[in-house]
Length: 209
Length: 101
Image 1 (cartoon, rainbow over the protein chains, first blue to last red):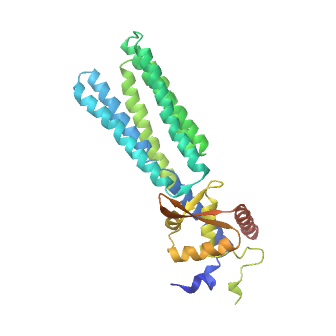
Image 2: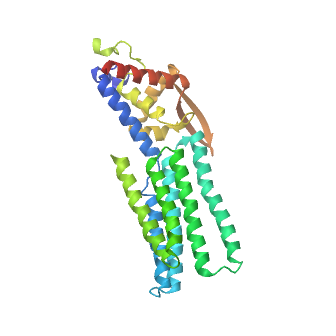
Image 3: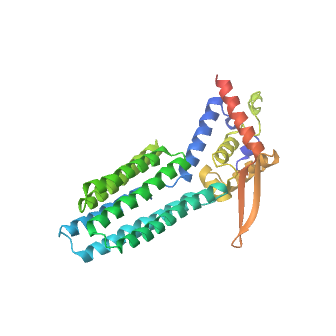
């Protein structure tokens, strides 16, 4: 055991410039560690969108069998969900206090938002809406919920890239409705999924800097 | 030896390489947030003994609150900056900036 902790030598008292650098370094390292990695959240969801909705689009065009698409969709939802859970619990490990509650409430917002969305859209689906219209309602409204929650996340944690992701998601939501059925699935996969992957990797690189 | 003394105007409790890193790390948490000892140790890359020594000094100065509790029958130690510690840290940082002009 070094005795330098009890009897500070010259190295223990850094110059003001070194001290400021050490402060910046420690705080930067801490914020980065406490923020869930975009590679564990946004990128897996982007890949899920690409594979899942890309699969649906290919199935509608007769390229993929329906059974394969069902399997792809399950995979495309379960893998990102598990990855998000692991990523969030890893970053928040050992933290307790108000920020933990904020995170839990934000996580619940996703569950509540999608529960309400499912209830509304499933009910609308029973009213004899044509499939192409119902498909546009689903893609537009689901991306609206996702986009708003990304905007909220960006605002809560003062994280501009996540806010940008929210804006991009809202643009994609509108685009899916404008292009119509079944191209909305191509937009979901490429602009939605592709956008999440690109922005997720960008966030990762930006945080590394 | 003059190097043993913190320069005038710099809080001697914080102005040591290890303790300023501990303080800066805890100051990066949200207000009223606490960090477990192992997570703090991982963030700082310090040995348990070393971290304990510095936490004790910061605690004696009233800058850090260390709380021991049980979660699912496992003992857990939390460390957090006190309001006084946060103020001292901010004053220390301002003093550093002042020295650098």
